[in-house]
Length: 95
Length: 495
Image (cartoon, rainbow over all chains, first blue to last red; front, side, top):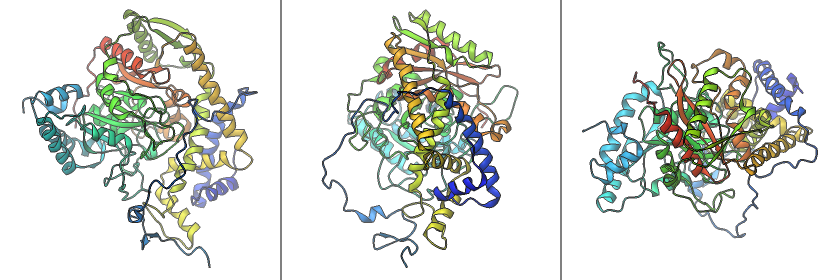
């Protein structure tokens, strides 16, 4: 399988990465080179094989469903590029 | 100073400190001096924390004086920039985490400080651990302390833990933390004549380690000797309820296993690792390693791991897929870089375009594509099925009586900075991990140990792969190789 220029732009939008027009061809060729490499997996017969969900046979631990952490909003927003009153600030989302 | 304290192994430094031959402050001071002199040339550190280091060393001296020394008391370490360190530069060598100083400490580094270790600073790496040459770092490449005989050209230290490997090899720390998703501990260790171990998945907590591919990522040490690596591994390991994949089992005293030998062990030699066009010196090194193990009483057994060649292509589906999901959090809102736009989507897109480097963007895009509607089964589910087969190959070998597997660590010695063949084709660089990536796909432990040199005097490493949670056998077998090789793998100082 390979991707065309339209698909490269669509992937960029899905990934929320701005791809400029002059970058499209470069990404297209790099992605196609990688997809070409991946293509060899089609040789492998995986009939009846279960997909791996965990490398070790373990059940994911669950903690009790109680509040176990929190109460320090100022630390949560300490690294935010823009914060006010312990809220993250973003451009207007709802008109 | 009696001797250059930075040249001591971690084990010897530990002894010197408890014997009171020198103080932790003197040892830390010696390393800080070495970093100041070397870092402009080597670029191994992206942040040095001299005041914090001296404070920690002073505390260590107080504990040493009171006879309350921890297992790593006063040992100066470098920390890969991927580990969260409270109040200290943590950016995964990326522009998108500009200015990020975590409010918390990763479990692995917290374990090291609990045991008395001293932090010298944060080490350079490939951006978000994506690379095999340390050239994708926002902070520029790390320059290997090694040069080929008769050449002045700058070489790569390998990656992604290139800063860790270079700093250890160039005596800029007594040992370093590193991480390995597809070979990022073992490949740079092999290229710099150092020892690096990726433990079994679940042995070290991933809490507070910037995530790349969560089902593959594991932390581990890089050190100058097998014993040093074992000492660090013991402190770094352990159950952590904050990582749901951390395994609740006792941590052995790994250093106690180092001199155990290989008598009676069966060492597997997988025929599929004999790649077409393998350089003669790699082939020779591998044979030499087998002879050394045999001479110490191991039995050598030919084995087959039939799905080996599919590990790398499957990895380049699984790892980018998980990365595209993990790296979605870098959106210009919660931390790091923000580039303003006309609306929120515009801000996301511009921030991520400016903040991520080319290799990271390429992998996020591959991951986004293979997870997108209509392709999920053909790519991701297929790769996870192939992963099951890769793991079964190893299980069959171990059930057949094999205790550990010996392979080359890398397809070649270190290559040049800005290598044109590698730059032109992303897949060519990915092939650096051809011998290491199978181990991550199966969640097994793997160690790289220096074993010889190429025709130009550059270090070459061998890899040992073990059963789940049997790192002890790897330390024992690696020690046999280290002892048998009996070579000086330190670089000739040019910086």
